[in-house]
Length: 265
Picture 1 (cartoon, rainbow, N blue to C red):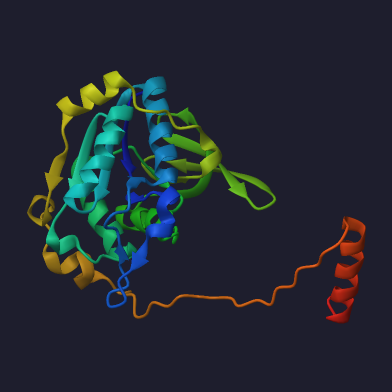
Picture 2: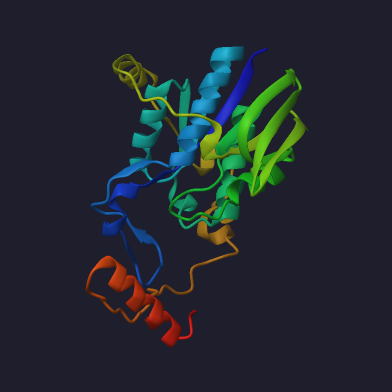
């Protein structure tokens, strides 16, 4: 069987440079200037799974993201990994979108592309809400599965996902088309090859705006977002510290005595 797969990815700040991130106190938005960016780690797992499914069943993989022109870099990396097409939703009308407005805009693009399966990461490292996957499924009116660590296809019309739970796992069967959010343990993402990078340059990235989607700017971006950042603050925990000196055995005895004195033991 041939599968038409859409993979949602997001360009996020590189976790190795999180210490450089700051927030705009007025808007609450992340200030990304000077901070390197990468594909959201869990989205790389989603893309890898899509590529493996294409290699197994044939079909096509389209990567999709919404963001500024800079997000083309993430899509080009996805193309270099093996994706067939890439679409960037880029329009001033998309700016300031919360998860609901983001999912709605992405769903418009997905309906335009057509799909059997939508894959995305469980959550992104810059917000961690885990909301876009389920919201996408609602807008697309298809089943949704989260925390997937393995996928099987008993037939052309059914998917069985193994989903991670806190103390085990759950197997869920859904009819296609469907939206699946994957967890880290599902695979090990590949790296782009030299040939893949050269091929990506030939594929290019399609730019879609509100007009392409046939969407009024009033139903996208900040204008359509029911949630907003109303305040930003830095959380600090001031703790009392004590240093105990001496041989290890002596220091342990001092520590136990001190903890008992404080009522902890």
